[in-house]
Amino acid sequence: MSIAFSCECGKKFLAKEEYAGRRAICPACKRTLKVPIQTFRGTDESSTPVPPPLQQPEAHGPNPAAPTSASRPFWKYPVVVLGVAVLLVIPIVLFSYSVWRSKVPFGVSYTVIEKVPSSPYLREKITISVVLNKRVSKEVLREISREVKSLEQEEYEITDVLYFLPGMDTNGWFWARSRSSPEESWVMIIGLTEEEKRFLENEPISLPNGSEPIGSWLEEWESVHMRLTIYKNNNIYYLQEFAGKGAELTLKLREVNPSVRHDDPHFLREGHDFQPDNGSIDHYVIDAEGKLRIYGYESKLLTTPEIIKPPLSGR
Image (cartoon, rainbow, N blue to C red; front, side, top):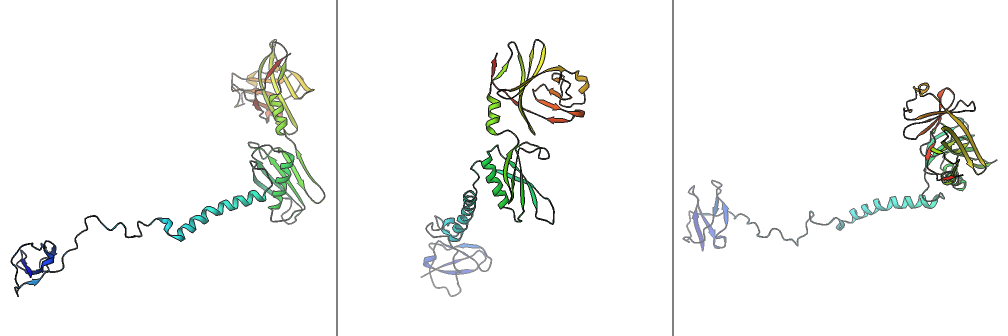
């Protein structure tokens, strides 16, 4: 049995019984038709077979169990998993190899900032400048020297390495130096070692009774390594230079008229400008923040010592 129905445009159709209630499109006017559920059934020769019904959407969407490329987890793709694993493993392997290969202790690092061959044509000598992340011992400097030399593509007879600490002017003096050649191999620390620095920072300051300390600083400049302390006693200023037990010198200071140093951008009215009373041309300028700057000939800035706060002890 068939279901007979017609479109508004006058086109007649016959549909199989199982299509009852479904939708179809009229081929004449393109209207959307619904196959009636109950209608006159017959075999009208003038009727046109109904076109295939429209696909009805499923009530609950696509089958969640059916695998699709969009819902498939990335770990289901072996190529992707392998690529991610390689990207993760390579840096770890390279880092582990560099640590295993290097004999420089963990926590010590350095950066090569300059390489200067003595001649562009001869392989006689090269000077390499590096910046350390902290003070180290001579043994560590020897390991760094060997490592820096081994990384050079060209072989030089003499390899000098200049070591700088963080914040140092790399165009000035260097904290340490090493040399490696067939004839000699040595390491020389010019500045303060970590132990020497710790001693000067923690050794109590011994001042006369009734003294008023102005400030203490750690001077580390070329071959000059000492603790500087400026204090006031009986309205007179003094400079104490302390390089260790038994190595102490006290100089009387005179305060210079600040107007003679009006060109110093670091000097403030609340600060001080001292000069040793022994005829020295050096100036010790303290600004309002307690920073000390030492000037030499023609007001050339020599050094800016580090502020320290060692303990006090009276005498």
